[in-house]
Image (cartoon, rainbow, N blue to C red; front, top):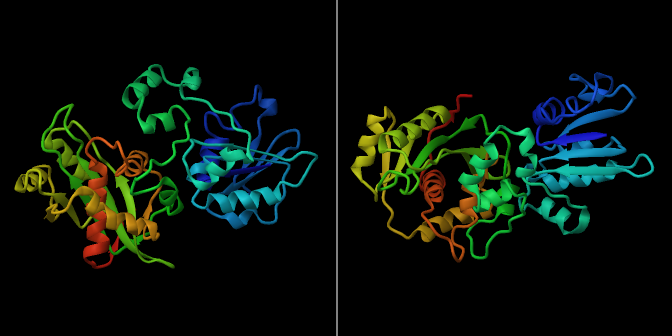
Length: 354
């Protein structure tokens, strides 16, 4: 059988060695397979064999052939349809080759294809798995995210389509996703959209890190590295969070929207230990008008997310649609970061510390 995950590491750590992995679910050691790391080969005592593949390399599935396959987290595969199609060509052994795909549902082309009729679909919620999770986890996570789009997707297993009118679509974001950031950046910034107040009912403080680098076939391309947005913290605490992220990613400066607080934002960051330049930017256009040029860069493939940023992507894919409520703090921070890196200026080459 083929074992296919987003990366080779995820196949080993989740599908093979993890708490629900193939080496942990046998009733006795007699049926437990052994894993040959150098050959990327899982072997059962009865002679069955599992071969490991990464969704980062679709062409690696050209040539081998299988009786069965297990594909995990297909919704985050960078080039999901190509990997899936190559795998189907290789399922040609035995009397009835089968493939099972497990994933949190996201409306990317591959998942929509399968749900539309290419596969038999079985659904399960996080609550269905409560017996295998920490005590209180389901209640806590439901309290935080129950009823939200993110909660319906991550906890309820629902496939949430993009609302009409939103500036971004999940399929566009996913088609440009990468799993590993470039080693070398021309520049990296952290952008923040500070709240006017603090406390449980205050707007969130949007905090997003992004970098710009040369990419084959794209010219200059922006990579969204992290979303550290937080809500309810005091100014000194969200300032410390932004400074910590800037140090982690090797940012050259912090970009801060100054419409809320002006020079106070700089003072907060300095009090939090910021030793980087702080550039204050002023919003002269409405949020949608500011975001539209950045959304156009996404449509042209010039902005890529490194890994999955669920809360940010959820807000992006609701922003601009009818009925959108609340302050798009994550989107605002993202827009400032991408705007500065891609639409305003260039920068000296920088090496990102790993």
